[in-house]
Structures are given as structure tokens and as C-alpha cells.
Image (tube, rainbow, N blue to C red; front, side, top):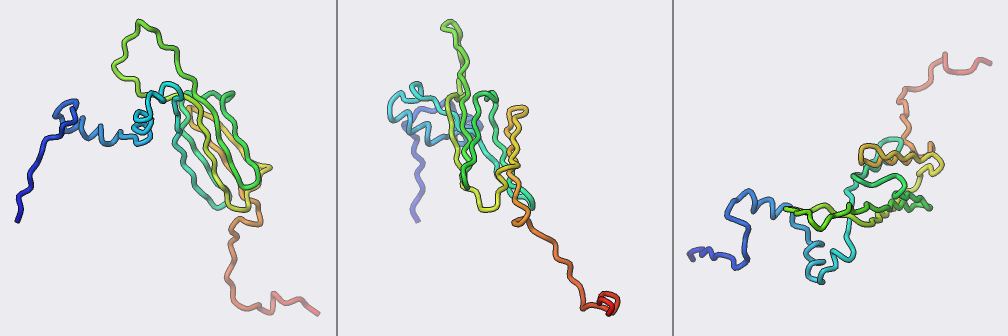
Length: 164
């Protein structure tokens, strides 16, 4: 059986603290790495990619999106046919030259997310609310596509039959 040999990486690390190493792994963003490889594109076109949650209830489709720092005036929601598009922007804050940052991890810029919806959305009754940095979108289902409860019953009784 061969022995496993552990080699030290030639990539410099912030330290030997396992917690910081784990944080580095959990915060790894392949898209950010790609932008760094392509040059300094991150400064030219910063990206903000909000996280969405989409669920279906019996009578609606519910979307929630984390949009901290996005103003209502900078948000656009469009529903065309079966296509829902949520787009907007988060403006960057002014940075002064004499300020010293120890970390600058917040992202800014424009975003656009598109979702294809199943049939049956009632486009006339869609509601949207932006509260505390969270967008709540409710897309109700048309009544004919909502689930109906069907009562299970035995045969008809004499009381159920119309009298002649």
C-alpha cells in the first residue's frame, strides 16, 4: 500500500487558521475568478446577482428576492406571456480617496433575472412589494388551474333524488 504524501501548496495563504481557510472555500465565487482572469473587468462592469426563492402554493407562485440597497425606482418587473423578468440596479456608494478599506466585498451594478412560468398565471392580479430589502412577488393562478377538492361520497340516497 502506498503512503499518502502531503505536499505544501505553492499558493500563498492568509494564514494557517482552519476557520479562515474554510471561509475562503465557502466564499469562493467561480464567476469572480473568471472576471479576474479576464483582466480588471470587475471594476469596469461590477455585478450584483440577487438571490431568488421561488415556490408554488395551491393558488399562486411566490417569488422572493434579496435586494438590499435597491430602490423601487431602480427596479423593473415585466410579465410577457409566460416570461417573468426582474431587473434593476444597485448604485455603488461614493468612495473617498482618503478612506482606507480593509475589506470591500459588496457588489453593485445592474442585474436581470428571467423565469419561465407554467401555464395558468393570472397576469391581471400580480402583486409586488419591496419591503426591508426583500422583493415579494405573488403571481396568482387562474381559478381553472387551481386544485379543487373533490368530495368522495357513496351513491345517491332517496333524499338526493328529485321527486316526481
